Structures are given as C-alpha cells and as structure tokens.
Image 1: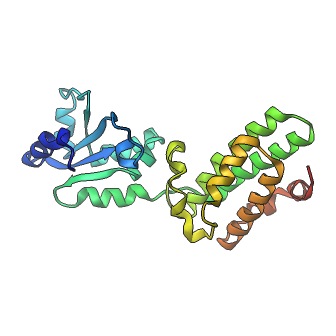
Image 2: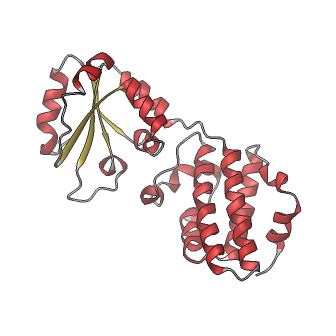
Length: 237
C-alpha cells in the first residue's frame, strides 16, 4: 500500500512474531472509498495470543482503525454476524506471514448458499408484486418488487458459490456474473428500472431470463409454484 497513513503499522505488524497477517475490510477494500474514508484493518494473531491480548487491546479510532482477531475468531464472526461474510470475502490481505490468511480467504469467498432457496425468495417477491398490481396496490407492488431483487442478487451470486455484494457495491460487481450470459449492462439497468418503478412488464421480462438461467444450472423451483406464476407471467398490465 502506498498510503503513508499505513506505513507505521505495516512496519510494526511483521515485526511481531505472533502475527499471522493483516487484513483490510470496508470501503477501501471494495473500491467504494472516498477521500476521507478510514482504513478498517484486522490484525490477525495466533488464537492463544489473540485471546490473551484482546482484553487489553483498545481498538484504534481515526484514519486507521485496527481490531484484533484470529483465524478461528474470523470464522466465528462470519457465523455470528452474517453481514460480515461479504466484508471478509471482499477483504484485502496486506500481510500474510505464512499463507494462512490466503487459505482462510479462499474459504471466506465461497458461499454455502442454496441458489434454489434464494430463487424461491425471488419468486415470492415477484409473484406478490404482480398480484399487488392486479389489485391496484402500488405500495405493495413496489415493496415486493424491491424484495425480489434482494433475493435475486443472492441467488445469482450463489450460482457462482459467492456472497452477493453489499447494495452500495452491487452496481460495480455485475461483471462478475459474465459467465451467466447476461448482456453487458443489462442487470444494472434492469435492477435500477425495477427498483425505481416496479414495472410489471420489466419484472416479467427479467423473470423469463432468470428462469432460463436457473433451468440451465439445474434449479427448477419455479415448477413447484404451480399455475399462479404461469398466469401472472403471461398477464399484460
């Protein structure tokens, strides 16, 4: 790293023989930082040393925030606080003494998420949104449409055994799904359109593409929904 704010720590960390490595998470790791963004760092120690030091360690606040952890504790945190899973998956390794963090990071990037379950959540939002439009319920249609997008993002990344990005990163990450055959810029534009308008026709068009993709990957949750979605997919609003 070239930022002078990190130089003292980058000199200190390798000198500590108990150090496993140093991680950077947060906006500076996901590429969404501003000029005044902090550095959110995790100093990873051996587990016994971490347990001994954590009681006396005061997390640094300011331009460079430093928390202590260990590889086992990182695994516990990912279970206890699911929102950290993408933060860990998108983290940057600044120092890795013996490759232990690289091994951990490879595992942290893999998501154990069932695409079919997330696809089911997407279908629930999609169907409920279109049913709300049928009833003239604009608020319900909009809220269910937004909910469907959340599940869809999770389903699409789950197909690649990855964690879906945070919403403020999503627009810059759709390129990670190129292997799924999406036209350039399509997902970003369609997500934006549905988030803005909950347009029924836009939802139907996206759903047709999603269904084809899911079938090509061996996921058939839409078949378990019976005739109701079939009618709604064909309806003109």
